[in-house]
Length: 426
Image (cartoon, rainbow, N blue to C red):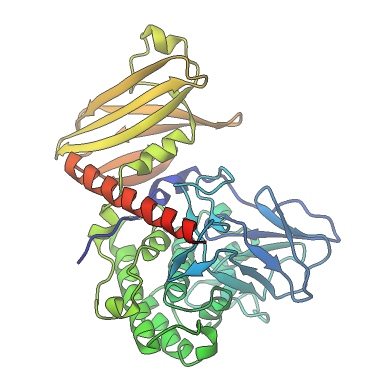
């Protein structure tokens, strides 16, 4: 199968997402937290036509919102990809802007149930809850306790692996439909058509196959130029099987990687319909080393054992900016970390060039804000994966050789060229 570049910063950055929880709202307003990862730039409306305003991670209606509440991407989709500016995205690195640490959000969801009239949690799991839920029944194979977590705390604050993974898998299927012609504003229908009595945890691919066959029967939901809806249904079913297998057999620290990888699928639904395994473990492993570089560059770092604390230059630097960060695979027992670091004023600089083996580890501490200082530990256990420990989270990071890094850079350069061309055509 042809290798595809995966915009994979989400593998790392999920560990840095701060706790969610409800935002403040008065008794006459409704606050909405929109998640797969934290979703910014969406249009959020209630059934009365009121439009919520976004600020600091939450959407707020200045009146009591009336269910259902609908969340819709504001991205323009052309030929299966975002055309022009990415307006709606999952802000995985929580810096409030779209960059390489984030994943475009190209779907929609409708919320018919909320545990609170003033504090609504909108995510793919709560989108499965019928308006008349009794609070005790399972929903699509998820226990009542898990569904309550999703509807009262949200995905991030619940810190529940099953909820986060389920949400990402659902979004990935929605994104696949959108890629192959489903109108983005109609993609909430994907979630609506999942029966509450079907188990998406154990039988995800079977449930999606049934939904796909049902959805393509309504041609009005698809763009006018969508061809061969039978192939669309088969392609979505094949993708469901792939991401279900990957999520079962691969230790994904950030489930949003599944969303990112479906966005790299071929534009032709027929090609994917003819490929029974359109996403492989190799696709996930082909993660450019800019993944960790982009994350590190977005943080203020305080150096520890990765560098020499007695270096006079470093002694003048309380906090670092790190550029050109790269982790290279040498062999099954050695890796190399290479980076250039400067102070915040770009006055002093030095090069980090550190080799790690199974017997030594290094660390940075990062300062996310004045109340959050934590540690990143490189703990190499050998093989093609480095385990990066962030706070209490273990992150498996796929390692690339020097040649693979160069090849991925060529893919990245080509991706940037294509994006630039598309924007120029607008």
